[in-house]
Structures are given as structure tokens and as C-alpha cells.
Length: 138
Image (cartoon, rainbow, N blue to C red; front, side, top):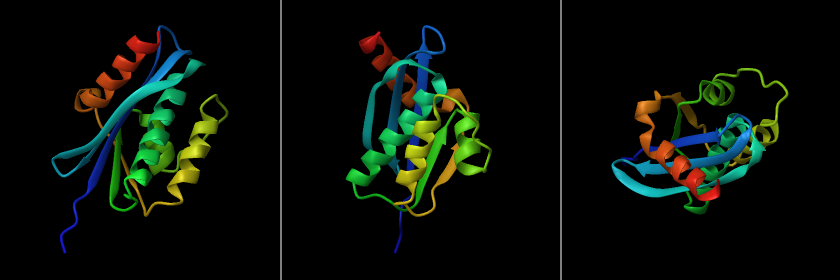
């Protein structure tokens, strides 16, 4: 049986400064088919790391609602998020720790997930969704 990998692109931002108004975006693909996309408000007075982790949390919740918990690859242009979630980097104190913990808890309901860093130019859709959300909430 052939199974297609599910790839999730996530992004978050905090503007006009960091911390600032935090927004997120994500896009979920199975093969070349787009399954879902969304963007929204992560919070006010939050850091870009909080917004990045908010994108991850919201994408994981959407995956669960779609019944997808296996063969998931998450791609982000945040080296911190990819390092902490996929490579065992230490988590120090910071405003994003609550979202990190929420993501870790959600991932317990998934099979092993892969985390991959991608350059910003390869993350355009999720970036655009986070910017659209910022324009809406700023």
C-alpha cells in the first residue's frame, strides 16, 4: 500500500517589533493536494518564537481534526523551533515555553513527526498567511 507523506509548512511573526502583535500561518499538503490552510492571531505583546509555536500548535490541532497523525513532516524557517522539536535543542525560559509544551503534548498523539528547516523563500505560503493575519489584527 502506498502512503503519501503529509507536509506542513508553518510560520509566525511578531510586528511591528519583537515582542509585538503575533500572528501565524500554516499550510497542509498531502502529495500535491492542499488539505488545509489558515492564519490567525497568536497574541499581543508576544515574541516571534511564540507566534512560530502557535503556528505549530494550530497546525497539529488541524491535523488531528482531519484524522492525520502519521507520516507528518513539519517544515519551518525557524531554526529554533526545528532544533528544539526535532533535534533535542534545550528549551530555555522565554514567553514561548507554554506553546512549546502545548506542542509537545499534542505530539504525543502522533506517530514520529519529522521537523525540517527550510529557507524563508521555500515557506512563502505560510509566511503570506501570517502576514495577511497581521494586516487583519494590527
